[in-house]
Image (cartoon, rainbow, N blue to C red):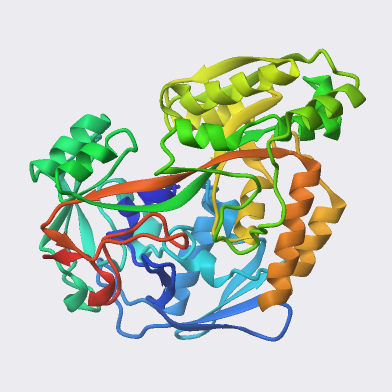
Amino acid sequence: MAGNGGSTVYTALAYDSLIHLSNDGKLEPDLAESWKYVGTGNKVFELTLRSGVKFTDGKPLTADAAVASMQYFLKAGGPLVPSVGAIDKVEATGPLTVRVTYKQPNPDAAGTMEQYHGIGTLIGPDGLANPQSLLTKSDGTGAYAYDNAGSVAGSRYSYTKNPNYFNPKAQRFSKVSVRVIGDPQAVLSAVRTGQVDYASGNDSTADAAKAAGLKIVKAPFFNWELILGDTKGTISKPLADPRVRQAIGYAINRDALSKAFNADFTKPSTQQLIEGADGYDQSIGYTYDLQKAKSLMAAAGYSKGFPLEILTESVLDRNTTYSQAIADALKAIGITVKLKVISTTVPQFIGEATSKKYAAAIWPSAGPNMFQNYSQVSGGLFNPFGHQDAQLDGIMQRASAADGSERTGLYQQASKRFQELAWLIPVIATENVYYVNSKLEGVSASVGNPNPMPIGPTPDLSWRKA
């Protein structure tokens, strides 16, 4: 039931995954020593498990244990299930061999088995037999085990060395503590004074962190988008016209917004993928063309504009800075925006966004390639009304069965189709920012992995004391 992104640290410390995504974005052997597709078409994927691995309950990692954990993940109905592909069945084909069969081609099967997708993060037999116990103790194969006695809910989560870990040399620390600190200034102070060695930073405090001599690590991650979900005009009739949606795309001056939001950590985003992702196409994207936007609005019969309520939140979009800027930009084409702000929690925002009560919303997408992005935005809060496009689906079906440059070319076709449909209007891409003090080495981030984790199955993949 866990999430991903930076919050993966809570699970990654105690639960190794089948495949490890390194901080530089490479897939490395972890609980699986090797993997491959069986046959053609990218529909059958097989993993060979590492021998001699034990869960914290002492039971051995076997193919049957792995299959039981993976099946449990699929049935539990957590938020990450849609990201792993349409799985038909998971089965043990040998004592240490697991086979995953997909209903449709999945060109990124290995990528869905790493620590950020959940299905490859294996839980032991005792934990599966009593899931409630996993709230107070871990039952994984990770380098560390959760220490409930040393933890304070909502404040500090402690982990100690797992005595059964298969590679003790990769256990660089005697214990790890994850602190929860909400205020950006307090986060910066904690790193500067040595209370913590590493922290998720904020562009508002980055200059002060640099002046304090802290190492700043950053990588592109979020692609902030205006989600125009009501494409049938159920709530807002104008949004049923693709010309109106495209006009919105051309009405936003992304260069100006990027500069206003600190260009060191914010870049203009003109298409469905951020630069560096597989499927990004430099030749396409929304340019700022106010005249074209007004012309499209007039052709659609809305030269005077219309009112539009947009759902947003102030958890990730602090002080709704991004949302207000988007709303202000749309005034130029006559769209009067009313922001409905959720200021409590992300789950509440997601609940409202999927309620079909709002024609539009603001939220970031992510993904290192078009397959993962397409899987994310095809449902949930990115598509609450369930729109579909046969042309886009057909492109992605062909891409899922392709490899190499052919797949990349099809991903680029999908990017272009996203632009034509204008279901999602990209605005800015923001970078994840982290602060590291002088006591810690080995911390890095990349487009392939913008959420670095402190652990890895080998010493070179783990953080370490300087």
